[in-house]
Image (cartoon, rainbow, N blue to C red):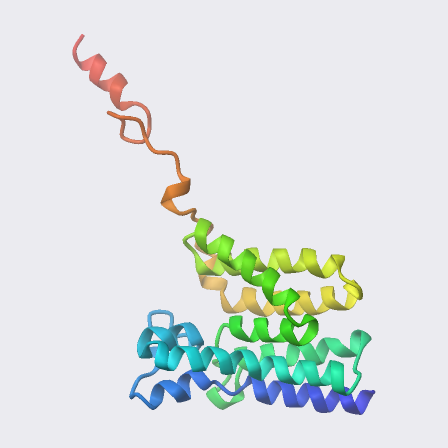
Length: 217
């Protein structure tokens, strides 16, 4: 079990380290790292290269994480806490790619891939639902990701083998928090449609009418 775990951990890390977003964008003379947050990930591949670059980049980032985790679990029979390093390796490889001097992506697509390898469709569905809810309610993509991870934790705790999944979740969320630390540090900002609208004649503090009535006396 030790040898299989070491081999699949190494394979997953190398696979995760392949930043397809950068290489595919270069085919169109673009670089996703030129975007505002300098993230060499699939979202910025969309931004700089459109769907022709973004869709393949996202799919490859997903597959490169899903395949080694699925192979380790389902083909080689790695289970229990031996599965933890195998599952975290693609996320760590993507986030700290040695091919790009440790400056990898934010590992969102890789996270989806890892949980697909672990749970097939269930984990990604829960993560996607939480992320979508966060995107609808929050202005920060980083906090939307965190909301999705909270939902994933609840799923993991209710799933068979919850201690192993919880350990994988903990390592995964630590990587995501580190990679999104700047955005998370700006705080949670709800979208404008969730905020109460100020009444007519007020400036948002509720004191405009009082000042206006006082000026007439």
